[in-house]
Each structure stands twice: as structure tokens, then as C-alpha cells.
Length: 143
Image (cartoon, rainbow, N blue to C red):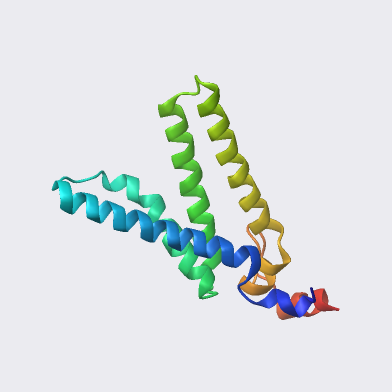
């Protein structure tokens, strides 16, 4: 793969965006259908990770300047909800512990991807916890 191929939303970056947008759309459809069918409401707090994921996915697809902050916010919210639900569920059974460990491993993999990936840097202008890349940095990385 050439360096020029790393300036568009494809590969794992596209996978992240599609997963976040698709998951948010599915949750909103199921929640909406459930509310209409049962005439009940759900706690709005539970929808925060859905909307942050949707925003992050859309920002990544549009290669917005807000993409990295949106991804950072999405990851922070996801981690906060992961921690609170893990404590609420308790880690008494091996199955729950394994499920939580897998979720944490997936979270860590995405975090490292957005922190170190050249595609993320080239497409979105910088990585997580990095300064904005100048055009000179991007040109130097292609040489």
C-alpha cells in the first residue's frame, strides 16, 4: 500500500465510522419502535453513547476538523459507560468477566489505532493526543 492510499476514509477508519453510524441507527430504530409499541420511555442518559458515536462516525466520514475531538469524546463517554455498567453488573461470574475483558480489549485497540495510525493522521490531520499536523509534516511522511 502506498502512502497516497492513506489520505482517504477507508480501511479501519471507514470500518470504525460504519460501525458507529450503523450501531447508532439500529439502536435509535429499535428504541423508537419499542417506545411506540409499549408507550413507555427510556432513560435518556442511556442514549448519550449512541449520539456521541453517531457524531464521531459522521465527523470521520466527512473528514471534519472536529473528527478527532468527536472520537475522543466518544471514547471518553464509552469508557465512562463501560466502567459504570461493569460495576453495576458486578464481575462475579466468569462469563461477565470475559465479556468485560473483551470489551476493554476492543476499546484499547481502537484507542491505539486513533493514537498511532498514519491513515488517521493523514486523513483527519492528526492523531489522538497529538498536535495538528502541518503540511510540512504530512509531506515529510510521504518522502
